[in-house]
Amino acid sequence: MMPPTPDNCPSDDSFTSDDDIMMDNDELCKSLLFPDVSFPSADEVFSYDHQQTGFDFRGFCRERELDFYGTVKLINYIRSCTGDGCTPQAIIETLQQSVPDNGRALWDDQKYMSPVVENDALLFCFDEASDSDSELVSLESLKAENAQLRSQIAEMRTTFRRALDLEDDDKVKTVVQRQIADRDRSYFDGYSCVDIHEEMLRDRPRTVAYMSFCEKNKDLFKDKVVLDVGCGSGILSLFAARCGAKRVIGIDNADIIVKARAAVKRNGYDHVITLIQGKVEDVELDCKVDMIISEWMGYFLLFESMLSTVVVARDRFLVDKTMVYPDRATLSICGVETSSFQDRSLSFWKDLYGFDMTDIADTSRSLESLRGTGRPTIEMLSPGCVITDECLLREIRMSSVVDSDLDFTTDFEFRALRDDTLDALVVAFSVYFEAHCDVPVQLGTSCSDPYTHWRQTVFMLNEPVGVSAGDVLSGSFRATRLASTRRDYEITFDLQINGRSRLPTMYFSLS
Image (cartoon, rainbow, N blue to C red; front, side):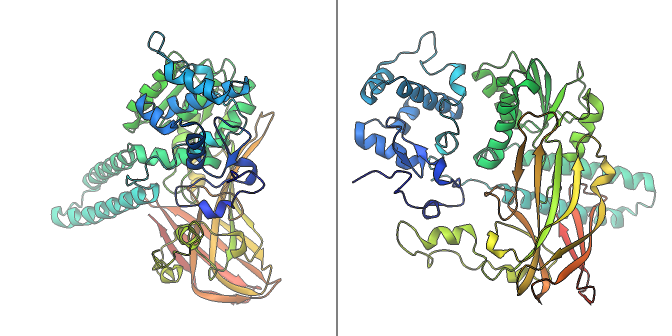
């Protein structure tokens, strides 16, 4: 049978699942040993190579106990061999007969952390199926657990007040401060789990945007001191170091930093990168920094985000306030119909290797059940759901934003593009790497952008509303952080159609 090629392979939709990486036709995975052959998934690459040569890539990686970074180096090493004209059999024999030299294998060289093939899709999906038997804790479920803990703490505060009759304000403040510290510990504990970082690293648009910014603007990093705020797994610190930074300092209060230090050392950058466990507000640095890089965005851009922490780092440590990346963010709103909505898991079951398996899928989820509950939901909607144009709600410039800007009220107005039913308002965000950049980079999360783990935030109307093409939908939008839980938001919408039909005010809680 002819192997799939970019011209005759099945469509990407036939292979997508919750953890899959969505790829365009020009982003198929090239075979390791036969680079003229491409496939929609890493599994098919490794299966084809195994069938043709007997070389079991995954088995080789397990045998050599290669971690994520070691596997990246091995892929790039093999790519370099095929690029030099080596035959598949010669490559396999070299790998199987290789003995580590002074404890280092042939591919264990820092140069193999750089992609040999530009935009090599295999580097971002080679491990997509390797953990299929394990239960991965999703980012959403961890945050839901944190939200539940916050709710319990709020109830405890009320109980304490009644039981202890704490009428003295100073005593009340002490209790609240202790509760905030407990919530902070819960928040950072959530980000100590490896699974949450794996989900973010698997998010191809997210990770590639940061990598592209670094790789395409190396002059910004050359001989600079870079601060990575909320460094997590350390991947942004590694990007910065690889692009020529003189020194990189990463700060994170989660325990994942212990493993990140080991990854930094394994990849030979421990002489450049220093990772500090602690809160930005408490850490003292021995120098000012030239640049801040951070992946601070949360759902809805601001929910559970680290933006206020980045602002603190900017004001405490940064020489030039225009050197925070991403340097600009926008929050936008549009109207959608949801009758055609299908979540990604249902789409997966609809065409499973040529079979309709939707009877097995969980079809109990319904956006309709959210009407009137005050609970937004995080979903990936298709562009076809959008029935209005888009309106900018908020623009944030990292050089000048202050903490008080994160609570705001703004007016919006957009037009219906067709006759349809308005079921929900959807908010999405984009971030931009632009200031001082030779090659600007943008990362978007709208319905028309590639899938990211942030997806879109969907606010279901209390009742569906019919609209006609050209109708003007206007109103006000208010986002306010809770006094006791500053990472949570209360959202209020006022909406009217053509300046006349006013809908009842809608209240939502992002917590």
